[in-house]
Image (tube, rainbow, N blue to C red; front, side, top):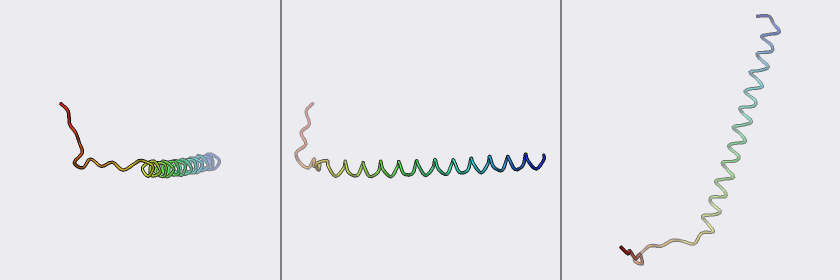
Amino acid sequence: MDIMAISAANVDVSAANWQQTASISLLDKAMDIQENQGAAIMEMMPPVSFGHQLDIYI
């Protein structure tokens, strides 16, 4: 291999690593947003209490 091929391969690997890091960061942010939205939905829902008022019909 000549110097130019090694240098080009290094640039390609570096770009791939950067792209993977950016993708992981984006997915992590999306997961955080989903977690926050899920928590907000859970807070909006009325509490469910089965207690002694559960009627079962067969």
